[in-house]
Image 1 (cartoon, helix red, strand yellow):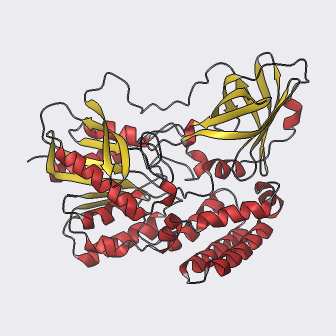
Image 2 (tube, one colour):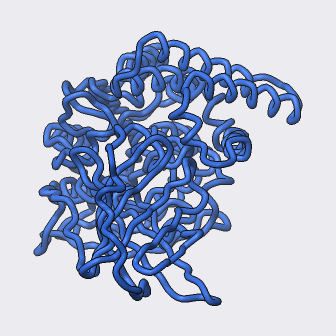
Image 3 (cartoon, helix red, strand yellow):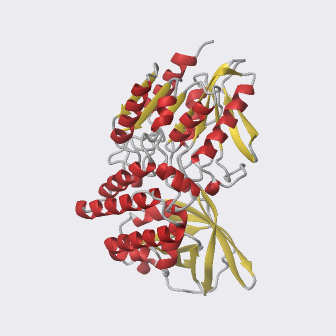
Length: 479
Protein backbone atom coordinates (compact mmCIF):
# COMPACT_ATOMS: atom_id res chain seq x y z
CA UNK A 1 0.00 0.00 0.00
CA UNK A 2 1.02 3.60 -0.41
CA UNK A 3 -0.87 5.17 2.48
CA UNK A 4 -2.17 8.67 1.87
CA UNK A 5 0.09 9.87 4.66
CA UNK A 6 2.78 10.92 5.01
CA UNK A 7 3.69 12.51 1.70
CA UNK A 8 5.85 10.16 -0.48
CA UNK A 9 8.58 12.81 -0.71
CA UNK A 10 8.86 12.79 3.06
CA UNK A 11 9.17 9.01 3.16
CA UNK A 12 11.88 8.90 0.52
CA UNK A 13 14.06 11.66 1.87
CA UNK A 14 13.84 10.79 5.53
CA UNK A 15 15.25 7.40 4.61
CA UNK A 16 18.20 8.98 2.79
CA UNK A 17 21.45 9.33 4.75
CA UNK A 18 22.69 12.85 5.48
CA UNK A 19 25.20 14.30 3.02
CA UNK A 20 27.99 16.16 4.75
CA UNK A 21 28.93 19.76 3.99
CA UNK A 22 26.29 20.46 1.39
CA UNK A 23 26.80 24.17 1.99
CA UNK A 24 30.31 23.96 0.56
CA UNK A 25 28.78 23.25 -2.83
CA UNK A 26 27.02 26.64 -2.93
CA UNK A 27 29.03 29.19 -4.98
CA UNK A 28 29.67 32.68 -3.69
CA UNK A 29 27.16 35.33 -4.82
CA UNK A 30 28.20 37.46 -7.78
CA UNK A 31 25.26 39.47 -9.14
CA UNK A 32 21.47 39.62 -9.15
CA UNK A 33 19.71 37.21 -11.55
CA UNK A 34 16.20 36.69 -12.88
CA UNK A 35 14.46 33.77 -11.19
CA UNK A 36 11.34 33.98 -13.37
CA UNK A 37 10.44 31.10 -15.65
CA UNK A 38 10.95 27.36 -15.83
CA UNK A 39 13.75 25.39 -14.16
CA UNK A 40 14.49 21.66 -14.15
CA UNK A 41 16.97 19.62 -12.19
CA UNK A 42 17.59 16.90 -9.65
CA UNK A 43 17.87 16.25 -5.94
CA UNK A 44 20.78 13.84 -5.57
CA UNK A 45 19.19 10.94 -3.73
CA UNK A 46 21.64 8.08 -3.18
CA UNK A 47 21.68 5.90 -6.28
CA UNK A 48 18.68 7.53 -7.94
CA UNK A 49 18.43 11.30 -8.58
CA UNK A 50 14.93 12.68 -8.08
CA UNK A 51 13.82 14.88 -10.99
CA UNK A 52 12.08 18.15 -10.12
CA UNK A 53 10.56 20.91 -12.25
CA UNK A 54 9.90 24.39 -10.92
CA UNK A 55 8.19 27.51 -12.22
CA UNK A 56 8.59 31.00 -10.73
CA UNK A 57 6.86 34.31 -11.42
CA UNK A 58 7.08 37.77 -9.85
CA UNK A 59 4.01 38.60 -7.73
CA UNK A 60 3.17 41.58 -5.49
CA UNK A 61 6.75 42.68 -5.10
CA UNK A 62 7.92 39.15 -4.33
CA UNK A 63 7.86 35.72 -5.89
CA UNK A 64 5.49 32.79 -6.19
CA UNK A 65 6.25 29.33 -7.52
CA UNK A 66 5.26 25.70 -7.91
CA UNK A 67 7.14 22.42 -8.10
CA UNK A 68 6.41 19.20 -10.01
CA UNK A 69 7.89 15.84 -8.96
CA UNK A 70 6.85 13.57 -11.87
CA UNK A 71 8.26 10.38 -10.36
CA UNK A 72 5.82 10.76 -7.47
CA UNK A 73 2.88 11.99 -9.57
CA UNK A 74 3.05 15.26 -7.62
CA UNK A 75 2.25 18.31 -9.73
CA UNK A 76 1.74 21.97 -8.95
CA UNK A 77 2.78 21.79 -5.30
CA UNK A 78 2.94 25.40 -4.06
CA UNK A 79 6.19 26.93 -2.84
CA UNK A 80 6.34 29.34 0.06
CA UNK A 81 8.93 31.76 1.39
CA UNK A 82 10.51 32.26 -2.04
CA UNK A 83 13.33 34.74 -1.41
CA UNK A 84 16.03 36.07 -3.72
CA UNK A 85 19.01 37.95 -2.27
CA UNK A 86 21.60 38.82 -4.87
CA UNK A 87 22.53 35.49 -6.39
CA UNK A 88 21.10 33.47 -3.51
CA UNK A 89 17.64 31.88 -3.53
CA UNK A 90 15.70 29.99 -0.89
CA UNK A 91 12.23 28.41 -0.88
CA UNK A 92 10.17 25.67 0.79
CA UNK A 93 7.57 23.19 -0.45
CA UNK A 94 4.32 24.11 1.27
CA UNK A 95 2.38 21.64 3.38
CA UNK A 96 4.86 18.75 3.36
CA UNK A 97 6.19 17.37 6.68
CA UNK A 98 9.83 17.99 7.44
CA UNK A 99 9.85 21.50 5.88
CA UNK A 100 11.55 20.53 2.58
CA UNK A 101 13.76 23.54 1.79
CA UNK A 102 16.01 24.46 -1.13
CA UNK A 103 18.88 26.85 -0.33
CA UNK A 104 21.21 27.66 -3.20
CA UNK A 105 22.86 30.24 -5.38
CA UNK A 106 23.02 31.12 -9.05
CA UNK A 107 26.11 30.90 -11.20
CA UNK A 108 26.66 30.31 -14.92
CA UNK A 109 22.94 29.79 -15.56
CA UNK A 110 22.41 27.19 -12.84
CA UNK A 111 21.13 27.16 -9.27
CA UNK A 112 23.05 24.74 -7.06
CA UNK A 113 22.99 24.18 -3.34
CA UNK A 114 21.56 22.08 -0.55
CA UNK A 115 18.17 20.53 -0.02
CA UNK A 116 17.06 19.81 3.54
CA UNK A 117 14.08 17.85 4.80
CA UNK A 118 14.03 16.62 8.35
CA UNK A 119 17.39 14.94 8.95
CA UNK A 120 18.18 14.56 5.23
CA UNK A 121 20.79 16.87 3.69
CA UNK A 122 21.20 16.44 -0.05
CA UNK A 123 22.68 18.45 -2.93
CA UNK A 124 20.49 19.74 -5.75
CA UNK A 125 20.99 21.36 -9.13
CA UNK A 126 18.57 23.34 -11.31
CA UNK A 127 19.01 24.63 -14.84
CA UNK A 128 17.05 26.00 -17.75
CA UNK A 129 17.51 22.90 -19.91
CA UNK A 130 15.21 19.89 -19.73
CA UNK A 131 16.48 16.98 -17.65
CA UNK A 132 16.24 13.55 -19.21
CA UNK A 133 13.85 11.30 -17.26
CA UNK A 134 15.18 7.99 -15.92
CA UNK A 135 15.36 5.15 -18.42
CA UNK A 136 12.22 3.04 -18.43
CA UNK A 137 12.79 0.49 -21.23
CA UNK A 138 9.34 -1.12 -20.92
CA UNK A 139 7.47 2.10 -21.74
CA UNK A 140 5.57 1.45 -25.00
CA UNK A 141 6.83 3.28 -28.07
CA UNK A 142 4.92 3.98 -31.31
CA UNK A 143 3.85 2.60 -33.64
CA UNK A 144 1.44 0.68 -31.44
CA UNK A 145 -0.48 -2.34 -32.78
CA UNK A 146 -3.68 -1.35 -30.97
CA UNK A 147 -5.93 1.67 -30.53
CA UNK A 148 -6.03 4.08 -27.59
CA UNK A 149 -9.17 6.13 -26.96
CA UNK A 150 -9.75 8.88 -24.40
CA UNK A 151 -12.99 8.35 -22.47
CA UNK A 152 -15.01 10.30 -19.91
CA UNK A 153 -17.77 8.66 -17.87
CA UNK A 154 -19.86 9.32 -14.75
CA UNK A 155 -19.71 7.63 -11.36
CA UNK A 156 -22.54 9.17 -9.39
CA UNK A 157 -21.77 12.89 -9.19
CA UNK A 158 -18.12 12.33 -10.10
CA UNK A 159 -16.76 12.44 -13.66
CA UNK A 160 -13.86 10.09 -14.38
CA UNK A 161 -11.41 10.30 -17.27
CA UNK A 162 -9.38 7.46 -18.65
CA UNK A 163 -7.79 5.66 -21.57
CA UNK A 164 -9.40 2.68 -23.28
CA UNK A 165 -6.95 0.36 -25.05
CA UNK A 166 -8.55 -1.81 -27.74
CA UNK A 167 -6.79 -4.63 -29.62
CA UNK A 168 -6.97 -4.57 -33.42
CA UNK A 169 -9.91 -6.27 -35.07
CA UNK A 170 -13.64 -6.35 -34.46
CA UNK A 171 -13.64 -8.41 -31.28
CA UNK A 172 -15.51 -8.94 -29.09
CA UNK A 173 -12.55 -9.04 -26.68
CA UNK A 174 -12.41 -9.82 -22.99
CA UNK A 175 -11.90 -6.65 -20.97
CA UNK A 176 -10.37 -5.59 -17.69
CA UNK A 177 -10.62 -2.45 -15.56
CA UNK A 178 -7.40 -1.47 -13.76
CA UNK A 179 -7.71 -0.05 -10.22
CA UNK A 180 -4.70 1.65 -8.61
CA UNK A 181 -3.32 1.55 -5.09
CA UNK A 182 -3.94 4.11 -2.38
CA UNK A 183 -3.13 7.77 -2.71
CA UNK A 184 -3.75 10.04 -5.70
CA UNK A 185 -2.80 8.06 -8.81
CA UNK A 186 -3.09 8.96 -12.45
CA UNK A 187 -4.34 6.45 -15.00
CA UNK A 188 -0.83 5.03 -15.49
CA UNK A 189 -0.32 4.59 -11.71
CA UNK A 190 2.81 6.66 -12.28
CA UNK A 191 5.44 6.54 -9.56
CA UNK A 192 9.23 7.09 -9.56
CA UNK A 193 9.16 7.51 -13.33
CA UNK A 194 7.47 4.15 -13.81
CA UNK A 195 4.06 3.77 -15.47
CA UNK A 196 3.01 0.24 -14.51
CA UNK A 197 -0.59 0.49 -15.72
CA UNK A 198 0.62 1.82 -19.09
CA UNK A 199 2.98 -1.15 -19.41
CA UNK A 200 0.29 -3.60 -18.28
CA UNK A 201 -2.31 -2.18 -20.70
CA UNK A 202 0.21 -2.49 -23.53
CA UNK A 203 1.01 -6.13 -22.71
CA UNK A 204 -2.64 -7.16 -22.43
CA UNK A 205 -3.80 -5.30 -25.53
CA UNK A 206 -1.11 -7.01 -27.58
CA UNK A 207 -2.64 -10.32 -26.47
CA UNK A 208 -6.23 -9.40 -27.37
CA UNK A 209 -7.55 -8.01 -24.06
CA UNK A 210 -9.25 -4.61 -23.87
CA UNK A 211 -8.12 -2.44 -20.95
CA UNK A 212 -9.60 0.64 -19.26
CA UNK A 213 -7.40 2.61 -16.87
CA UNK A 214 -8.54 5.90 -15.32
CA UNK A 215 -7.33 8.83 -13.24
CA UNK A 216 -8.34 8.66 -9.59
CA UNK A 217 -10.86 11.15 -8.21
CA UNK A 218 -9.39 14.64 -8.24
CA UNK A 219 -6.41 13.59 -10.40
CA UNK A 220 -5.77 14.49 -14.04
CA UNK A 221 -9.05 14.67 -15.93
CA UNK A 222 -11.22 13.25 -13.12
CA UNK A 223 -13.35 15.35 -10.80
CA UNK A 224 -14.14 14.69 -7.15
CA UNK A 225 -12.10 14.57 -3.96
CA UNK A 226 -10.10 11.45 -3.13
CA UNK A 227 -9.53 12.62 0.46
CA UNK A 228 -13.23 12.29 1.29
CA UNK A 229 -13.72 8.97 -0.52
CA UNK A 230 -13.52 5.51 1.06
CA UNK A 231 -12.66 2.21 -0.58
CA UNK A 232 -16.40 1.59 -1.03
CA UNK A 233 -16.65 4.79 -3.11
CA UNK A 234 -13.74 3.57 -5.24
CA UNK A 235 -15.59 0.29 -5.79
CA UNK A 236 -18.48 2.32 -7.23
CA UNK A 237 -16.00 4.02 -9.56
CA UNK A 238 -14.69 0.62 -10.68
CA UNK A 239 -18.23 -0.58 -11.44
CA UNK A 240 -18.86 2.54 -13.51
CA UNK A 241 -15.75 1.65 -15.52
CA UNK A 242 -16.98 -1.93 -15.93
CA UNK A 243 -20.27 -0.67 -17.35
CA UNK A 244 -18.45 1.56 -19.82
CA UNK A 245 -16.40 -1.41 -21.05
CA UNK A 246 -19.45 -3.66 -21.27
CA UNK A 247 -21.23 -1.10 -23.44
CA UNK A 248 -18.48 -1.05 -26.08
CA UNK A 249 -19.29 -3.18 -29.15
CA UNK A 250 -15.65 -4.32 -29.34
CA UNK A 251 -15.85 -5.84 -25.82
CA UNK A 252 -17.63 -9.03 -24.74
CA UNK A 253 -19.97 -7.78 -22.00
CA UNK A 254 -19.96 -11.11 -20.14
CA UNK A 255 -16.12 -11.26 -20.01
CA UNK A 256 -15.16 -8.06 -18.17
CA UNK A 257 -13.24 -8.18 -14.90
CA UNK A 258 -11.37 -5.96 -12.44
CA UNK A 259 -7.64 -5.97 -11.71
CA UNK A 260 -6.59 -4.10 -8.59
CA UNK A 261 -3.13 -3.31 -7.25
CA UNK A 262 -2.57 -2.86 -3.52
CA UNK A 263 -5.68 -1.02 -2.21
CA UNK A 264 -7.22 -1.84 -5.59
CA UNK A 265 -7.13 -5.43 -4.35
CA UNK A 266 -9.76 -4.43 -1.78
CA UNK A 267 -11.84 -2.66 -4.42
CA UNK A 268 -12.19 -5.64 -6.78
CA UNK A 269 -13.95 -8.06 -4.41
CA UNK A 270 -16.27 -5.35 -3.06
CA UNK A 271 -17.30 -4.42 -6.60
CA UNK A 272 -17.69 -8.05 -7.73
CA UNK A 273 -20.01 -8.81 -4.82
CA UNK A 274 -22.15 -5.80 -5.67
CA UNK A 275 -22.62 -6.60 -9.35
CA UNK A 276 -22.91 -9.76 -11.45
CA UNK A 277 -21.39 -7.73 -14.28
CA UNK A 278 -17.88 -8.48 -12.92
CA UNK A 279 -16.69 -11.73 -14.49
CA UNK A 280 -13.35 -12.13 -12.68
CA UNK A 281 -11.03 -10.48 -10.18
CA UNK A 282 -7.23 -10.16 -10.23
CA UNK A 283 -5.50 -9.08 -7.01
CA UNK A 284 -1.94 -7.76 -7.32
CA UNK A 285 -0.45 -7.33 -3.84
CA UNK A 286 -3.98 -7.08 -2.50
CA UNK A 287 -4.56 -7.13 1.27
CA UNK A 288 -6.00 -10.30 2.77
CA UNK A 289 -6.26 -8.81 6.26
CA UNK A 290 -7.46 -5.51 7.68
CA UNK A 291 -5.33 -2.40 7.46
CA UNK A 292 -5.06 -2.55 11.23
CA UNK A 293 -3.32 -5.93 10.95
CA UNK A 294 -1.31 -5.00 7.86
CA UNK A 295 0.22 -1.67 8.99
CA UNK A 296 2.30 -2.96 11.94
CA UNK A 297 3.89 -5.64 9.74
CA UNK A 298 4.49 -3.08 6.99
CA UNK A 299 6.11 -0.68 9.47
CA UNK A 300 8.40 -3.38 10.82
CA UNK A 301 9.53 -4.77 7.46
CA UNK A 302 10.19 -1.36 5.89
CA UNK A 303 12.13 -0.11 8.91
CA UNK A 304 14.30 -3.22 9.09
CA UNK A 305 15.02 -3.03 5.35
CA UNK A 306 16.28 0.53 5.87
CA UNK A 307 18.73 -0.62 8.52
CA UNK A 308 16.68 0.06 11.63
CA UNK A 309 17.81 -1.32 14.96
CA UNK A 310 15.61 -4.38 15.69
CA UNK A 311 14.83 -3.28 19.25
CA UNK A 312 13.82 0.21 18.12
CA UNK A 313 11.82 -1.22 15.23
CA UNK A 314 9.93 -3.50 17.61
CA UNK A 315 9.04 -0.47 19.72
CA UNK A 316 7.89 1.38 16.60
CA UNK A 317 5.67 -1.54 15.64
CA UNK A 318 4.15 -1.61 19.13
CA UNK A 319 3.27 2.08 18.86
CA UNK A 320 1.60 1.53 15.48
CA UNK A 321 -0.42 -1.30 17.02
CA UNK A 322 -1.42 1.01 19.86
CA UNK A 323 -2.58 3.69 17.41
CA UNK A 324 -4.57 1.06 15.47
CA UNK A 325 -6.27 -0.07 18.66
CA UNK A 326 -7.24 3.52 19.42
CA UNK A 327 -8.69 4.02 15.93
CA UNK A 328 -10.63 0.78 16.33
CA UNK A 329 -12.26 1.93 19.57
CA UNK A 330 -15.25 4.11 20.28
CA UNK A 331 -13.68 7.07 22.06
CA UNK A 332 -15.10 10.51 21.40
CA UNK A 333 -13.11 12.76 19.08
CA UNK A 334 -11.41 14.82 21.78
CA UNK A 335 -10.36 11.76 23.80
CA UNK A 336 -9.11 9.99 20.67
CA UNK A 337 -7.08 12.99 19.56
CA UNK A 338 -5.46 13.31 22.96
CA UNK A 339 -4.57 9.61 23.02
CA UNK A 340 -3.14 9.70 19.49
CA UNK A 341 -1.11 12.78 20.40
CA UNK A 342 0.40 10.85 23.30
CA UNK A 343 1.35 8.00 20.95
CA UNK A 344 2.90 10.55 18.60
CA UNK A 345 4.88 12.05 21.49
CA UNK A 346 6.34 8.65 22.31
CA UNK A 347 7.09 8.02 18.64
CA UNK A 348 8.93 11.33 18.58
CA UNK A 349 11.02 10.34 21.59
CA UNK A 350 11.81 7.00 19.99
CA UNK A 351 12.87 8.65 16.71
CA UNK A 352 15.22 11.10 18.43
CA UNK A 353 16.56 14.22 16.78
CA UNK A 354 15.96 13.08 13.15
CA UNK A 355 12.25 12.60 13.92
CA UNK A 356 12.04 16.01 15.59
CA UNK A 357 13.73 17.66 12.62
CA UNK A 358 11.33 15.90 10.29
CA UNK A 359 8.40 17.72 11.86
CA UNK A 360 9.86 21.14 11.12
CA UNK A 361 9.70 24.32 13.19
CA UNK A 362 6.28 23.59 14.69
CA UNK A 363 6.16 19.91 15.67
CA UNK A 364 2.83 20.19 17.51
CA UNK A 365 1.14 21.60 14.42
CA UNK A 366 2.71 18.87 12.28
CA UNK A 367 1.45 16.19 14.68
CA UNK A 368 -2.03 17.72 14.65
CA UNK A 369 -2.08 17.58 10.84
CA UNK A 370 -1.05 13.92 10.90
CA UNK A 371 -3.80 13.13 13.40
CA UNK A 372 -6.30 14.89 11.10
CA UNK A 373 -5.25 12.51 8.34
CA UNK A 374 -5.53 9.49 10.60
CA UNK A 375 -9.14 10.48 11.29
CA UNK A 376 -10.19 10.83 7.64
CA UNK A 377 -13.02 8.53 6.49
CA UNK A 378 -10.65 6.71 4.14
CA UNK A 379 -8.01 5.88 6.74
CA UNK A 380 -10.47 4.79 9.41
CA UNK A 381 -12.23 2.55 6.89
CA UNK A 382 -8.90 1.10 5.79
CA UNK A 383 -7.85 0.31 9.35
CA UNK A 384 -11.15 -1.36 10.27
CA UNK A 385 -12.15 -3.10 7.04
CA UNK A 386 -11.62 -6.87 6.97
CA UNK A 387 -11.51 -8.07 3.34
CA UNK A 388 -12.05 -11.75 4.18
CA UNK A 389 -15.88 -11.77 4.16
CA UNK A 390 -15.85 -10.18 0.68
CA UNK A 391 -13.30 -12.74 -0.51
CA UNK A 392 -15.42 -15.58 0.90
CA UNK A 393 -18.47 -14.27 -0.94
CA UNK A 394 -16.77 -14.32 -4.36
CA UNK A 395 -18.12 -16.81 -6.89
CA UNK A 396 -16.09 -15.63 -9.88
CA UNK A 397 -12.57 -16.72 -10.86
CA UNK A 398 -9.85 -15.09 -8.74
CA UNK A 399 -6.12 -14.65 -9.38
CA UNK A 400 -4.08 -13.37 -6.41
CA UNK A 401 -0.38 -12.61 -6.86
CA UNK A 402 2.29 -11.16 -4.64
CA UNK A 403 6.07 -10.83 -4.63
CA UNK A 404 8.16 -12.45 -1.95
CA UNK A 405 10.07 -9.17 -1.45
CA UNK A 406 6.94 -7.04 -0.98
CA UNK A 407 7.54 -5.11 2.24
CA UNK A 408 4.32 -3.10 2.04
CA UNK A 409 1.79 -5.94 1.67
CA UNK A 410 3.57 -8.96 3.11
CA UNK A 411 3.02 -11.98 0.89
CA UNK A 412 2.81 -14.57 3.65
CA UNK A 413 0.46 -12.56 5.84
CA UNK A 414 -1.89 -11.58 3.04
CA UNK A 415 -1.78 -14.39 0.47
CA UNK A 416 -2.20 -16.95 3.25
CA UNK A 417 -5.33 -15.12 4.44
CA UNK A 418 -6.65 -14.91 0.86
CA UNK A 419 -6.05 -18.64 0.30
CA UNK A 420 -7.90 -19.53 3.48
CA UNK A 421 -10.85 -17.30 2.64
CA UNK A 422 -11.22 -18.66 -0.89
CA UNK A 423 -10.86 -22.25 0.33
CA UNK A 424 -13.48 -21.75 3.03
CA UNK A 425 -15.84 -20.23 0.48
CA UNK A 426 -15.63 -23.21 -1.82
CA UNK A 427 -14.81 -21.01 -4.81
CA UNK A 428 -14.11 -23.52 -7.62
CA UNK A 429 -11.67 -21.36 -9.59
CA UNK A 430 -8.93 -19.50 -7.79
CA UNK A 431 -5.19 -19.23 -8.23
CA UNK A 432 -2.66 -17.87 -5.73
CA UNK A 433 0.92 -17.25 -6.83
CA UNK A 434 4.00 -16.06 -4.98
CA UNK A 435 6.57 -14.62 -7.40
CA UNK A 436 10.11 -14.92 -6.10
CA UNK A 437 12.24 -11.80 -5.77
CA UNK A 438 9.57 -9.25 -6.70
CA UNK A 439 8.75 -6.15 -4.63
CA UNK A 440 5.47 -4.31 -4.07
CA UNK A 441 5.64 -2.81 -7.57
CA UNK A 442 6.40 -6.26 -9.03
CA UNK A 443 9.96 -5.39 -10.01
CA UNK A 444 12.90 -7.76 -9.59
CA UNK A 445 14.47 -6.35 -6.44
CA UNK A 446 17.35 -6.91 -4.06
CA UNK A 447 15.84 -5.92 -0.71
CA UNK A 448 12.28 -4.82 -1.51
CA UNK A 449 12.92 -1.42 0.08
CA UNK A 450 10.97 1.54 -1.27
CA UNK A 451 14.33 3.21 -1.96
CA UNK A 452 14.90 0.70 -4.77
CA UNK A 453 11.72 1.53 -6.69
CA UNK A 454 13.18 4.41 -8.66
CA UNK A 455 16.60 2.84 -9.10
CA UNK A 456 15.27 -0.25 -10.89
CA UNK A 457 14.81 0.21 -14.63
CA UNK A 458 12.25 -2.58 -14.92
CA UNK A 459 8.64 -1.47 -14.48
CA UNK A 460 6.87 -4.87 -14.30
CA UNK A 461 8.43 -8.32 -14.27
CA UNK A 462 7.82 -10.17 -17.57
CA UNK A 463 6.64 -13.27 -15.67
CA UNK A 464 3.86 -11.23 -14.06
CA UNK A 465 2.70 -9.88 -17.43
CA UNK A 466 2.71 -13.39 -18.89
CA UNK A 467 0.87 -14.84 -15.89
CA UNK A 468 -1.95 -12.28 -16.01
CA UNK A 469 -2.43 -12.58 -19.76
CA UNK A 470 -2.38 -16.39 -19.70
CA UNK A 471 -4.81 -16.60 -16.78
CA UNK A 472 -7.38 -14.27 -18.36
CA UNK A 473 -7.18 -15.84 -21.83
CA UNK A 474 -7.45 -19.40 -20.50
CA UNK A 475 -10.83 -18.51 -19.00
CA UNK A 476 -12.19 -15.71 -21.17
CA UNK A 477 -10.19 -15.69 -24.38
CA UNK A 478 -12.85 -17.19 -26.64
CA UNK A 479 -16.60 -16.85 -26.92
